[in-house]
Amino acid sequence: MQGGFGYLYGAGAAHFIKLKVGASISNIGTIAVADTGGLAEVIPTITTAFTDAWGVSLDTATYSTTQADVTTADRQVTVDARPDSIIRARMSGTSVTGANLVLLSNTAASAGGTVITDADVGTADMTSGTVWCITGANVGHSRLISTHSSGTSFTVTVPFPRAIAVGDEFLFCPYSHLGGAGARDGAGNVQATATDFLDADGAIASGTGGVVAVTELQLNGRADSYVLFVLQDHALLNATL
Image 1 (tube, rainbow, N blue to C red):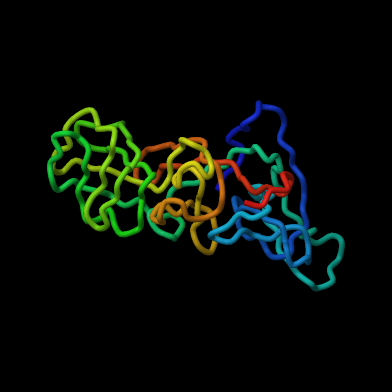
Image 2: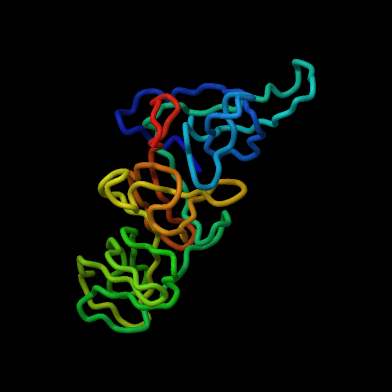
């Protein structure tokens, strides 16, 4: 995940601080969260929660209980600790970092532009997520998913501007940027990919993962689409959501 994509409340200056680690943070871009075990100040996030988060790690640090000389690594990680910092995460098509988003190829024409049919919609409920067209007459247009028929189709309430033809291709994700945290599943949660926590799991059910407020979606192709968000349970806000 990447920080530095602006702030909700004016440009201002970043608030870079160094925090001692209670577990190794091996990847730049991991969200650092408070260490509730009390060994130090921060540890890497887990996949499903960003509780008492400080921000995205801008470097790495190795945790050790072995006595070391002062010339060795300080076992601290740098974060931008502004609570309104906007974080950008690439959308992965699985729980593994780097996977492409699932491609839908429509199998049944929809003259009214409201139904996208393909078994690859899967079984994870994407209601309140977003679907967007990448080939066909509706390229560049996106819609909120109002109904997910498991393993069959997506339905949208606001029609795409043109008929959806057989073979038109779409991508989808469990996120939306309207309503704010708690108002709609897709706007209030992001789940990180497993192990390294660097991408957003775009195959998980909408409303699953750490509590955030989605600020923007950058809807491009299978390998370069992004969700932008701010942390809602930030260490400096004293919030527990």
